[in-house]
Amino acid sequence: MPGELQAIFAELGLAPTEAQASALLRYLDLLQRWNVTYNLTAVRDRAAMLTQHLADCLTVIPPLQRRAGSGRLLDVGSGGGLPGVVIATMLPGWDVTCVDAVAKKTAFVRQVAGALALPNLRAVHARIEDLKAPSFEVITSRAFASLAGFTALTRQHLAPGGVWVAMKGRTPDDEMAALPADIDVFHVEHLQVPGLEAQRCLVWMNIRKPA
Image (cartoon, rainbow, N blue to C red; front, top):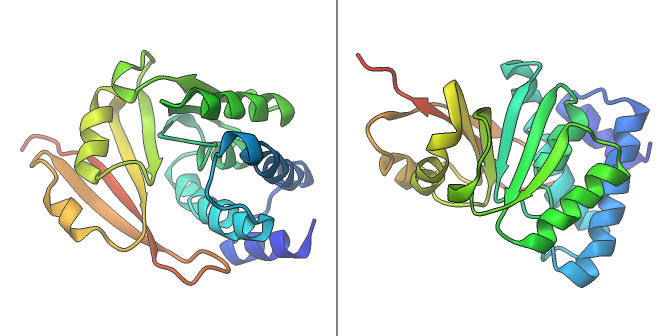
C-alpha cells in the first residue's frame, strides 16, 4: 500500500483489507482516466484527487461504521461516485445507490462497480425527484444542495427512523436555520481531512418525532 494512502487510513483509524486499498487506488486511476473525456471533476492532479476526493470521502467511513454495520444508503448528486464508491468499497455491508441527473457520470459509476467487483454498488441516471426505489436508512450528499433543498428532494426516499448525512465545509448555520420545523439537526460532526487544511463537517438530520 502506498505510504500516502496508508497514512490517510492510519490518521482516520481505518484498517482496510489489501483488496479495499487496491480498489480505492484503482478507482483513482479510473477517475483520472475518464475525467479527461467525461469531465467528472475539476480536480485534475492525482495527488490532489487523493486528498480532496479520496481522503475527504474516507472521513465519513468511521461515523457510518458507528451508525450501523449494514443497510441501504442513497448518495444523491453522486457525480463520479463521491462518496458512494468509497462507502461501497469500505463498507461492503451497505447497499449503496448513487443517483445523478448526468448520464455520463452514472455510466462511469457503473463502470467502476464492474471494474472493482462491487456487487453492493449501483448507479441510477435520474433526477432525484423521479427516482423509483425502496426507501433508504441513510441518505447522503456532498456538494449537492442546501440542507433544505437536500431534505425536501429526498424526503420521500427516507426510511422510517432513517437519517440524512450531509457533507459540508464550515458549519452551515444559515442552512440549518432554514430547515422546516419537523426536521431535526441532531448532530454536527466536525471532521479533519488528512492532508487538507479546510473545515469539514457532517450534518446529521432526521424527521422529528411528534411530541
